[in-house]
Length: 284
Length: 157
Image (cartoon, rainbow over all chains, first blue to last red; front, side, top):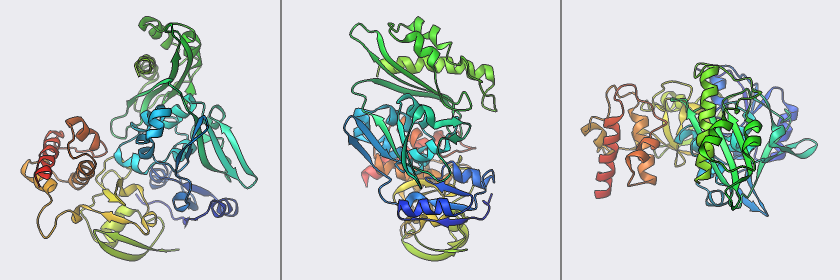
């Protein structure tokens, strides 16, 4: 399988990259390429121009910035997985990165690529939504920050404009919040048939006073399981109660159906994984 | 339009004009002539095309050759030294860690990368380390055993 022909640019500055985006036709940005290249080989994507961001320095970092942690968009899953800073201050990101694809994909795939691709079965979008992260987009008119809840627009569609580049992701330092990401993975490629990210806090009495649940693989885009969050918030999380609440995880969601699972199977799995992920976070 | 790239493969440097759409796997097999890197599923699931690029295990069918410009690649052909098999290769042969052999180059490089980072892996570490490499014949048992044996031999060496 050979991709269609394209022109290739590998700029060394962000400005140069932005110029290519606005001056060339039908441009696709290449980050790690772990989603884009297969699509091009299958000729589901046939961009006329590729702008490779990998030669631009300063898009690859993980830094503490006050009460937040910022990541360059070209940071790889492997770097996230092994970051001591993230493990200490925002463990949901390493927990999620550790189960993306396989070793090879984690070495090459990037957080920015995953978010911009907005795969409805992507792992990282679930964590980003759960963390209420913010994404920095730079375009010809300067930069803007996009909240996670506004970022994932639909199937393979993010809020990024065609002439914008995602350069940075900003997540809160969690200061002891408990997190987990669990997924039922499709065997060969590791995609989430269902994936559930949880971030919660318990008060001294064991009541849940802060809760976010992000779900991937179930709808046409990643979503917050607000119905479940609402039931559990302010309550003590005993096992029966969690199970009851988790039944609401697909409420209001048009559950997708494909070779990896029927509507019924996926809905069932979503409930099961919501229970497991909430319990795993409590024990984290 | 062709791009000129300079890529070092197993210590030897190649300067070649390539089409941007040429995949690294095809560059290695057809331009460089090293056919140990296999092409299996072509959508990045099977891992037969696995190589080590600047020290990182990657799938060469999910990279364009132009992305490797200025970088160093290790393929399975680069493991044996002076006609002597690498201990990992030896362990696969002696432990019969293969049947048809199609996935073997990728398996061996994944094992090489794993043991470089973790010389004393548990069985679970090995299985996770090889998760990106699919084998349709063996059921994996003898592959896992071969990696265990290779770890033992490498520690002795």
